[in-house]
Image 1 (cartoon, rainbow, N blue to C red):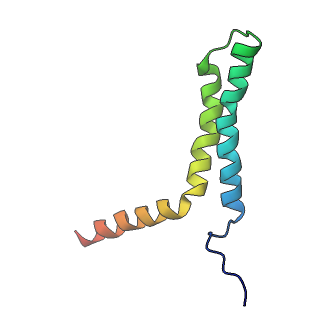
Image 2 (tube, rainbow, N blue to C red):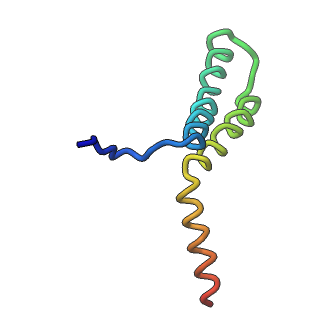
Amino acid sequence: MEPTNTRRERDGWTILGTALLWLGVAVWGVYAVVRYGLGGDVSASQFLPSHLAGVIPGVVLRRRHSIRRGLQRLLYRGRES
């Protein structure tokens, strides 16, 4: 008997989304090291675009199936009216 995998299989897009998410969050680690560890004169606004460039597409790629289902429901509901 083959073991059943209760965890959803990960495809390439989900893996890419996870990597982008982690990289977007890791930006704040770099910020902390530069600002507090090295005493650099940096502001959070310099790191925010890099954070958002990783986190937003990462979340979209990871949740794309849920987003698609929600959009389909909205579009279908609009046709009934």
